[in-house]
Image (cartoon, rainbow, N blue to C red; front, top):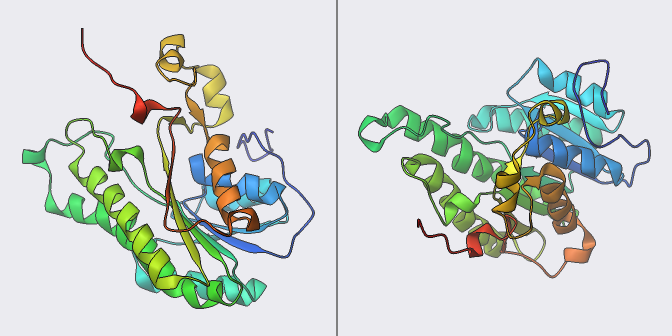
Length: 264
């Protein structure tokens, strides 16, 4: 679906509503946007948050009447408190929290050049952010036997060179997930989804610059993942069908973490 805003989505909006409210962070693009669109298609009211104050409102408008945008830096506790309060003022309840907001280091800074400020910022967003959100959302999630899903990464269990900060933040998030599950149960379930290679570009960009056959073929499933693959798993974990599932990490990577790779 290509909208008048210029934002291109693979999923459409829904005008139905199931009475449940979800907060999805980092939802102005990529995996977070895919999760928001999927939940809306299932009838959720979705509050999308992001630091991108320009794109965020356009995304919410494109997703339809079941989407609301709020600006939030998840590493800033005052913004988290204000954002959660805004959700409650608007809807009076919160049933699900999806902690997707995160940053990575596309330049893969070598350890000797890694600035402490960059390390601290990545952990603040990727790890402290989910903790702060769980802290301030817990009372409202508990009231409706809600659920939390944290978006971790296969980098929690395997690495490329020079990704210390990102790997540490995602490894910590997996550990935080099972800690929260024990602390917040039985009223709140907490799980993590660890995506592998997900082509999270807008559909228009994917069509213009498709991945190669070799990119797809290296995966045991025969293809690189899509945001819909991740969104489907998140939606299931938030559903009542997953009521006996908590404290777990679900890897969505096309089987790559199970594949032995040797250089010939």
